[in-house]
Length: 198
Image (cartoon, rainbow, N blue to C red; front, side, top):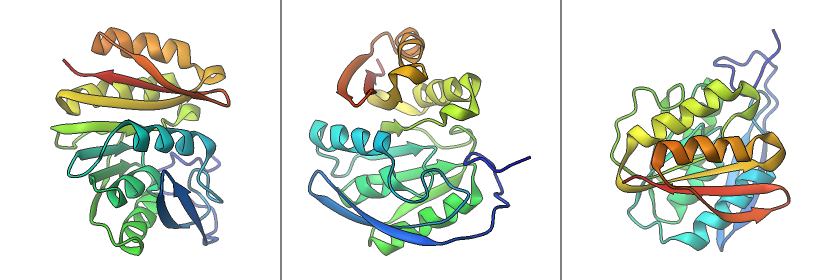
C-alpha cells in the first residue's frame, strides 16, 4: 500500500526540506519531509484558515488543539501568536517534525500521537483543523465529533474545507452537532466554518 499523509508510519524515503511562512504578521519557519501532507509549502487551505484565525481572535493564553496537525503549520503559528498549543496526528514522521518546528520557532507545544483526537485531554478554548479529506468522510466526521467533546463550553471549532470536497455536507453535520455553524471566510473555493459549543 502506498503512503498517505495519514499513514501512521510513512515508508517513503526521507527527503528533508524547509521553508518560511508569513501570515497575519506572524513569521514562522518549518522543516518538512516526504510522507507528510503538503511537504513543500504550507497548503492554501491552511493559509486561508490561519488568516481567518489571526483576524478573528487574540490567541494569547488560549488553549488550542490543532487536530490532524501534520508538521505543525497551524498549531506552531498559533503558538507563536501566543496560544498554548496542543497538536495531534497519527503520522509519526509528522509529529517528529512538529516537535522540531516548535523548537525551531522558540515555542513550547505538546505534540501527541492520536487518531482524530482520541485520548487527548479536553477543555480547549478552540479546536482548529484542516481535516484529512482523503481519509474519507467517516474519519473527517470523527474529527468534528471529537472536537465537540474536547471543547469547553463556549469554545469554538474552526474548520477549513473546500466546497467541492464536501463543505456543505460537513457544515450540515457540524450544525447538527453544535446547533450552529457560520462561514467566517471564503477564498479560492475554501470555506472556514466556525461553531461554538453551548
